[in-house]
Amino acid sequence: MLSTLSRLGRTPRRLARDNSGVALLEFAFGAPLVLMLGLYGIELANQALINLKVSQIALNLADNASRVGLINNANIEQLREVDMNDVLQAARNQGAGINLTTNGRVIVSSLEKDSSGTQRIHWQRCIGQKSGTNYDSTYGTTTTTAGTDTTPANAGTLAPSGMGDAGQQVSAPTNGGVMFVEINYDYKPVVGQWLMSLIGSSSLRIHYIASFIVRDNRDFAQIYNPSPTATRSTCNLYPA
Image (tube, rainbow, N blue to C red; front, side):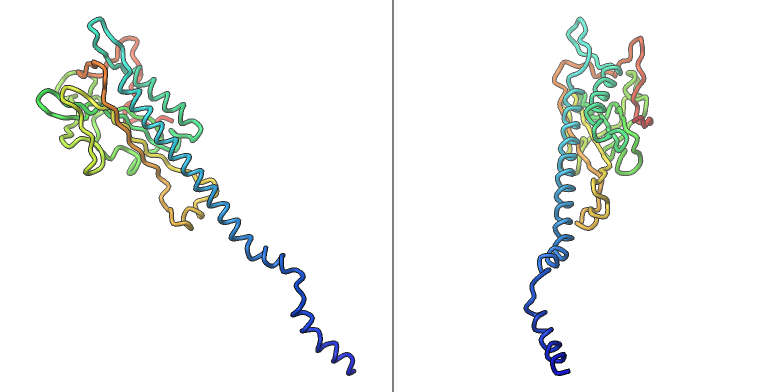
């Protein structure tokens, strides 16, 4: 009986000195934190990569739209609907890996200023299935027929302050134009939205703008659509 009690008395002391299984316990406590940090790193890297891709698409599209067109015999560049469709298709192809036109909206605006100093958004062309607040243009809109002919009814929308965020608006040079591109993209997390919320980043919309001055001798009277006519990528349409 005394021997049994003695052994029982020594058991707590043996357990106190026993360090077997410590590593397993440490792993059990530390694994969730390590896993969370790893997932956070993956999500952060992917988000940075997607931001870079969207910004590059915006820059390339604005640059291409500012240079494309058909040079006529008078050495004047005429921008055609087929030209705009081509540069929009290039943006679509560039963004195929991130499903840009399925998860976002791309708006190209021709911001122009005439000799009197009147500045307008002459016309706009768009692609992408996303619509509504935060996806359609937040810097001004035009009608679907704006820029299709030279009539005053299709002269576009006045934009005296230019386009862009307050205090950072872009303006066109006199007798010139600027191709202004806006992309709004719905970011899809790799891990899940719960992690984005956990790390304090609840917004999943990626927004980029870019602009390039039209450097060629462009005819700003209208955007042409000679035969065989091309389908206009007007902003009342939401194609992928």
